[in-house]
Image 1 (tube, rainbow, N blue to C red):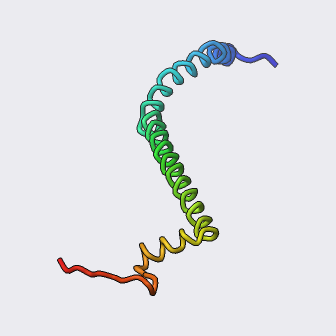
Image 2 (cartoon, one colour):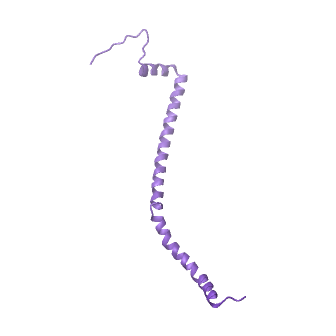
Image 3 (tube, rainbow, N blue to C red):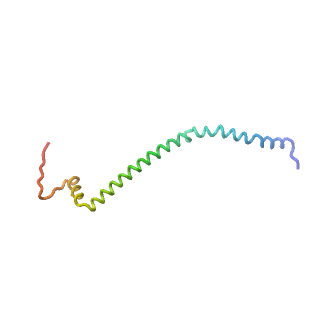
Length: 103
């Protein structure tokens, strides 16, 4: 079966101009999508947020290490337990005298 002339011509136009139309569509739409609020600016904002979260994670990790060292010292060192009892709880030994001054 032989296609009619208008159908052949349509196929030839589609073969020839469809890739060009797709390329033109990509050239127009890619910069629009990259520069839109959901494109490159959103990527930059997410990268900044990620850096901030990583900084918070490193700070929290350091705090956790410091607290673990303090717990370990409290478990093993009686002088550390005494220091905490004096500083945080205000305890004194029975043989010590306490002087209180009013302001």
